[in-house]
Amino acid sequence: MPDLDFRAPRLFVDAPLSQGETIALERNQSNYLGNVLRLSAGEQVLVFNGRDGEWQAQIAGRKRPDSLEILTQRRPQDRLPDIAYVFAPLKHARLDYMVQKAVEMGAASLQPVLTRFTQVSRVNSERMRANVIEAAEQCGILCLADVAEPMPLDRFLTQRRPERLLVFCDEAAETASPLQALQNALSAADGIDIPDGIDILIGPEGGFAEEERALLLRQKRTLRLSLGPRILRADTAGVAALALVQAALGDWGAPPG
Image (cartoon, rainbow, N blue to C red; front, side):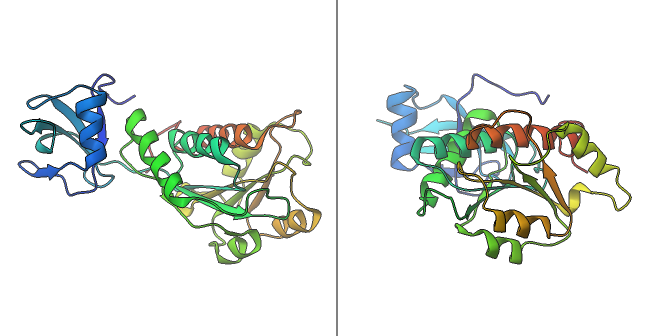
């Protein structure tokens, strides 16, 4: 577990970070520091930009916080394992929850896909990005997950790199130990190497259509995974699948190489 300061406020800034730099605060950031956290000039916060690690910064401004002076680096930049969370989008608050939890679980990218039974046809990508930033700020994460624009499932399957492992979470799969299945994939003759990347696919609340399931099973390097004897809600299934993959193939067991 890294040495994290859980009490210090953390702020994402979209600017290069180095010692001696002065970063102008956006209006909402100034309001958050001054009116929500009641911080003033001279007090310190932690900042990150997803590229240059985490830095100690000092607030400046006469009447309200308006800039940050970058002091010293607290943690160097790290990287996430190449895990893409691929999912049929949900509605409003449940989508917010799903995005936040995927970030907390260490997903490096988020790819919404539209399936036959997807209930949401439009996705607010800017809201998703805002949730990515908020989750990273709160959880001590230094990397920001990429947010892709939604696309149909068949197009995603056509465009994805075939050497990546596709973990296809299927409610119709035979119930078996999902952790053992992932460990078997790791030790299989052809090998599953984390640098090749992993796509974790969670379907919609109505499940996959039969033609979609057939298409998925024809993909190279596909692992059809059961998540246990109970049917999980899509947002719950996402958290469960990410935890299993991180434990078996990701960075929970060892730092990525």
